[in-house]
Image (cartoon, rainbow, N blue to C red; front, side, top):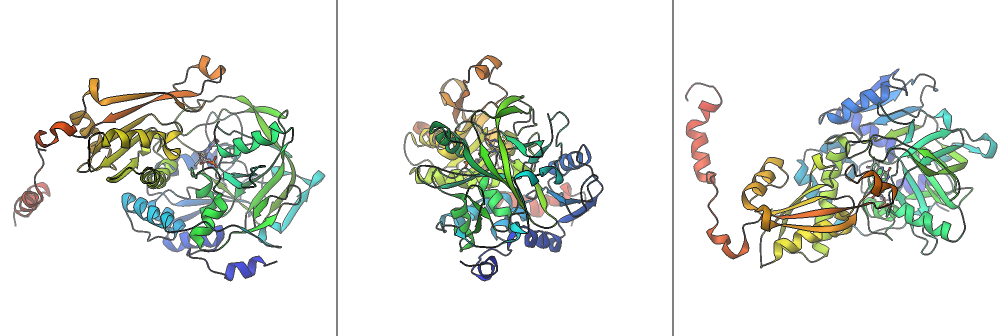
Length: 495
Ligand SMILES: Cc1cc2nc3c(=O)[nH]c(=O)nc-3n(C[C@H](O)[C@H](O)[C@H](O)COP(=O)(O)O)c2cc1C
């Protein structure tokens, strides 16, 4: 079997090898701060909320956390700037958000999945707790929001499960609540792949083998919170982007593949009848909407961790925040990809708006090519896999509108749509208990569905050529205005 050392020398198209190398790069970019003494009860959560709401804030590595061994760290605000997300994909760090989104799309389209590869050693095996030795309380687990129902060790984390039918391994980011030294609870929304895998085991009367990784490679984490199609393993997707197989070690208890360079991994089984209250938790919609419910827990039978392990923290905040800025860039790229795969032509730009949690407000710009084109684009954006979960409003506009700019999008919607005739509603669509607008009765009844509005704000096809001309100066007019009159705006003396 190849060793990790051998694999780390093998081809890797990315400019870093794993989380620690990536952190070094942040340091070189001036994008890292080390903070000592913040506590898990309040300090880390308070500082993180500020950092995530500030678009230029650095990533922060919390060390010397009171009550924990020095060196047991928490890293937050990983993807807070386009530059750090670009680094994660190995792209130039100075792109604006729209260009970065388009470059990510090119990268994803140009790569082919490469399956993971088992290796016999790796840093994650530096420390192992098995059976009665298991104690996850040694790792710092912050309370992230003021009204959270507990501490969450897993926010920048992912669950590894296997489809018992096809054998495909899934990595999915689902929040993980600390419960006791051998137990964590986690919440997966209906329809998510980890939940589908879990329910297949339960339908066979078996517990679901699960590994939860709470710190590790930054691109694996990006993949784990990305809506890849069911059946595509996040390991293989990342392998494709690296240009080499992701090295994994075999879990002693479940046999599941664990990243050989993971910081911390919990391994065990999830039984259908083993549930405890989970939540409330501050969610990406900006509410504590799903409250506290009984959810399945992981009965941890083995823990693997590196020396001086790092927990990665990625808690959602009221949007727009780090998570939504990151997801807007990435989800817009993947939504455009899926729409093109569904053969919608003429899409010039897609933007999943930060303020809508990168899901609930989507702008699609098209060059209209035929009657009905706008409606087709809007419905596909609302219903394809990347766009389907927890969406609300899709606004389709012509290509002269910059959909990445919220004001431009709202201006186009206000002026080019007619409320009575431009809005299509789709009923009974895929949502989640996290949706604050689903009534308590419907939540109790398990009716996690909402509706979608597709707003056609393109110039109506039939009279598009007679639509009033936009009152904006032409490029030539604007250039001349700036040359002759720019001094007036800039409060400088006339040239
Ligand atoms: C920081 C973060 C936390 C998330 N927490 C949850 C969660 O608690 N439950 C959930 O179902 N989805 C959560 N998501 C969304 C899923 O990670 C995302 O939909 C992903 O595609 C799921 O993986 P899957 O497609 O393999 O199911 C979270 C995403 C992020 C970025």
